[in-house]
Image (cartoon, rainbow over all chains, first blue to last red; front, side, top):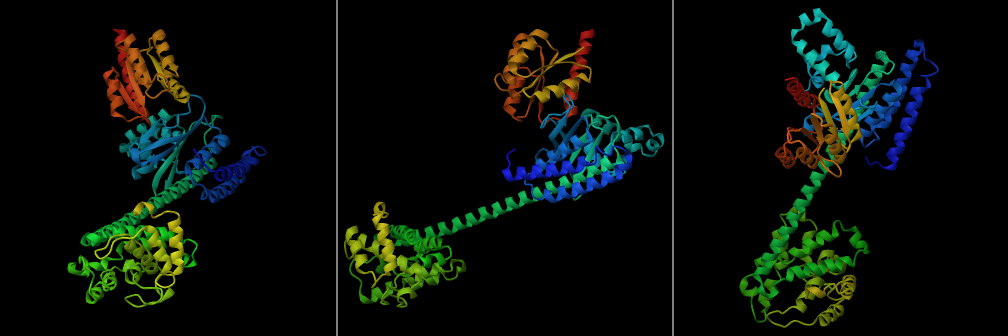
Length: 440
Length: 126
């Protein structure tokens, strides 16, 4: 079992304190007059133990420690701890100690949930078989089996008694202590005979029950945490799934735009890649730092920036010659059409700004709103540079493409007029790193 | 007295099973590996062999095959953590008379072995 050093330290502290408390009064006061005093001390040790229990991540460690404390304190032939495992619908042995031959190997045995030794703790009708302590004690069972009056009054318990006795014999158990949490039996602690040959005292049984219930608390806490972690993971998966759905939907929409315009085939994909390359060079920008989910928003915005072209007639979009001023006015509507199409998707939020404002110019001569400088939203300014670079480096119906170097020169030339100089600087850094090389 | 050989590479299992079956009137031999199990089987010819399937070196099924070469009527019961149908089938094909999966139910182990022991005891008398 792997534990962090801190947890181990906690354990050692706990064990030290616990054993100290428990053993301090044992040796100097062997006479029975000190029993009450010793009982009180158990209490103090237990309180301290349960306070620390919350810190332990692995309840199995706690249980093992408890078994060790009992074995050291009470001196029995052997101890065994069985915990409920849902997968096997059984109580599986997770810890054992004791004499050679009596100690049951860990993981070797299990008690099915319908075993009579389990039933005695889980069936209301069998409660009379437990002593008033709530633990299952061998000599109590033996006494009941010899009690003619009890047997006559409870004929239905005769078989149960011999079943329980047989199970206790199999495990060589002298006492079985239940560990409940919210009325559910989480596990049982089995103890063999005391080495002294004497029976267990009332204090000792009380001590076992308290320990068992503290252990139950720790187990339940751990299970609760585990369930919670499962839920968190589920939600994360769900989020990731819907996020992927979102991205893929955007990609599908982008493909729909590209499909209509054979001349700009692959345009959206390239513009998106340029945008992301520029974004990487802008990580130190305070504007970017303020922008929530910057990269993700830019990614989706770039994918959708030309979606408004859906509303432009094919005759204009596919025209091989130069556009008339009227036709160009029509083309200029695409950012607003795009933003209008996407407007009902409230979740897009700022992503819409990239769609609406990617044709704005730094000097205020762009469209649709003629915004200037930093008035133009960040996503729009970035997409504008990426969009222009792709337009220059690909063939259009009315002009042939230019080289990358020429395009870069053009972008640089328009820094401060058409483009935000800060974005151009990031673009140039990205270009220097040859980030666009494999795309063109 | 019916003789049983326990073969398991876990020492605790050998010790526990030894005391468990001795308390039920059987003579118990133990071996902590397949090789040792084979040697003891050849020498002492136990009536029943309880074999753990998963062991370093010669595993349980390999031991079963070797034992069957010595005595094709040997009574072998396999114990394994693997709830693997293939292993169970292979062991059965090689003549295993019983198969118990770990973590086991103690009374099932007792029943499987003791019933066999009683039957062998009865055979010995006749």
